[in-house]
Length: 165
Image 1: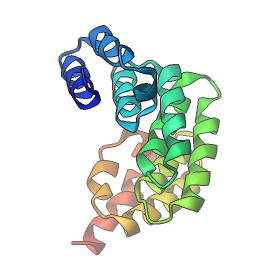
Image 2: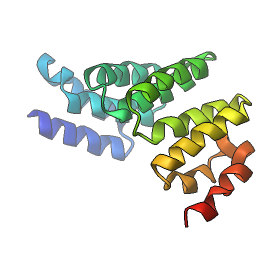
Image 3: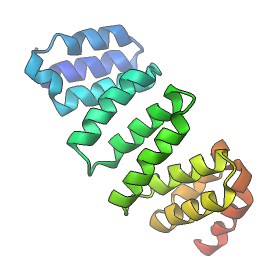
């Protein structure tokens, strides 16, 4: 089975919850194909769905290193780090602070930093980051007002509604 077909089949299995079959299809690929971006991305999707944080972290880290300008891999790795261990939130935040320096135009990075700061009780920093995210992409306003991580600053975030309508 060629690479494109294998990834498509694996994705189909993943979408209907047949995760072990999805992994089998990908694992049968020749060694050279296992390092292909599409294969690694499919493993990221599988391990996100199955909440296998360690494997998600490994694959998303590989993709982040290979494609450092693609914000999704930074976010996926931080997502895995946050959930993998008790010290995960600090590790995820450190990673996203690096991303914030490198990927200045990406609203999702300060948005996630706002979440991390807020759950740690640093509401001033959380508000600073959410304002930055909203400056970059106002669509995050709707998301922020539903995100339980940001609940402590919802009233501050709510103030942005009138400014941007």
